[in-house]
Image (cartoon, rainbow, N blue to C red; front, top):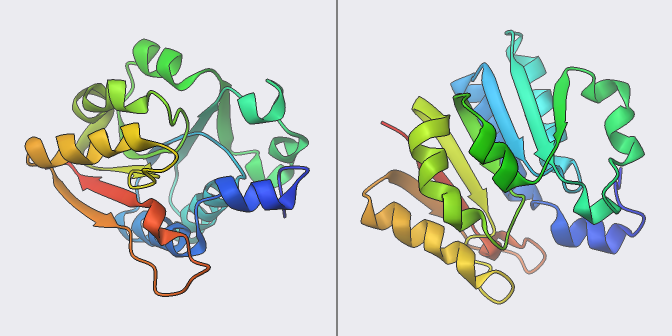
Length: 186
């Protein structure tokens, strides 16, 4: 189901199928109880995370933060569907939420403010990510559109954070080259 009125735009902003599969597998395997997704976008990754959480059959607290800029500042009707009833939706810019949150999360997926998220990356890693947590950033090698996000990858390397970058396509239609950076906190 497309969240946007324009399915082509939905495909453009959505995390690709391969990376969503990886995100879902990480949630299924790690079984985090407290999760944060920064940016709802098309809702594809949110639905995949939610499905993985349900398959785990363990209690969870899942928060999704979005300023709904892609929807004119108003949450889309999609988020009112019953499947999202267990999610705590917060309407806020990513920066404001990060600066005002004192919560720790075992799993964080960041795919919101593509123009400035690198500014608070280290804060999120050090202060919001629980020990043994997983932090994921999308579009880190999408340098034509978001060259600033490569700073997150470079800082990950400089700080010697345990990570894996997934950014190779095997088929033309995949869009994996946009990059999914998975960071493991030890």
